Image (cartoon, rainbow, N blue to C red; front, side, top):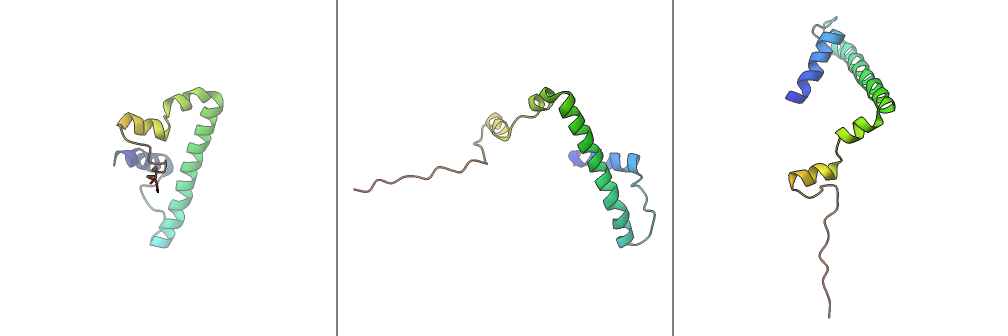
Length: 89
């Protein structure tokens, strides 16, 4: 729930998503999809600008999946489990 609150607030305040301009589900979708695309495009541009200006900020701030798993004390879920080998006489 916390993850979506910022996105929803940004859409409502910045892009006018609080009220639909038209009535009907099809027309509301036709309005909301471009607004969502514009929001994502703006975030992408900001992210790319930050990466080019300060590349060390993003790599230091975002640990990899294996590092997050090791911090939690679990194995990396992306690695395949080792299969047991059996010795045949």
